[in-house]
Structures are given as C-alpha cells and as structure tokens.
Length: 158
Image 1: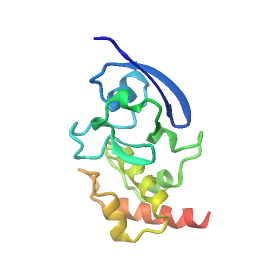
Image 2 (image 1 turned 180 degrees about the vertical axis):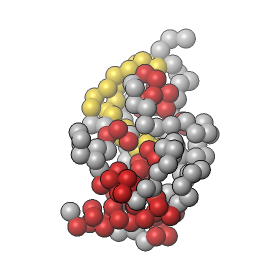
Image 3 (image 1 turned 30 degrees about the horizontal axis):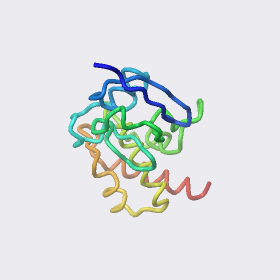
C-alpha cells in the first residue's frame, strides 16, 4: 500500500508525515510522531483517552484517519505546557490529585481545555457534561471536576 503524504499543524508547528490510508490519527501521533500523550483506551471512541482538538473541535483521535489531518490544526496534550511551565489545568490536576494511573488524564485535560475555551465559567453540571465523554477507572470524578473548577477560577482572574 502506498503512503499518504500529509501536511498539517500540530501544537503550533508545521508537520509533514506519511501514513497508510487506513491508519488512525492516534497511531500517527503516537507511532510516527512520538506524541504519546493520547492513549488508546478502547479504539471505538467510547473512553476519551485519545482526545485531541482538531480545528477547534474535541474529537477522539482513534476515530479520525491520519490522512484526514491534511491542512488542519491539531492540538494534543503535549502542546498545553509552555516549556517547563505547566498549563493551569495541568497544575490544578496535580494540586487536586485528579489523576492516578494516567491513562485517562491527557484526554481529560484536552476535554477540559476545550470546555474552558468555550465556557470560561462553567457550573459543576456543565463541567460534568463537558467531560462526560471521558472515562476514568481509578480516581472517580470529583477530584477531576474540582481541578477544572479551580483552574477555571484561576484562568478567569488571569
């Protein structure tokens, strides 16, 4: 099978890669580009562990073909921090102990980033709804919700 040449923007950087026509964007990110933050939890778009932002829309990268990223803007968890300075959401997840095994954490962070970009002052119900596509098998959800609430408050004041 011949590869598909793709030119895209990932975390603000122009990126070119070759992929197979049936290769998922998740596999491209992890196996070809070394961006291993997004995880494959289910492969069917049910768990949110592979969440990314594609053209300002939260998507499961396991459901997007790598070739579909042509000319588009991709944001992954790796693009959240600025050098050694963590994004406010990342810092609040640490402070609130909103992570354990880490499989779901990148997806939750990206979903929360997307939520706060669209709604900088969400209620608890709106946070829970905004994160509903992400499953956690370890922590439960209260610490995650509290971390997002705290981050929203800090980000509003910044």
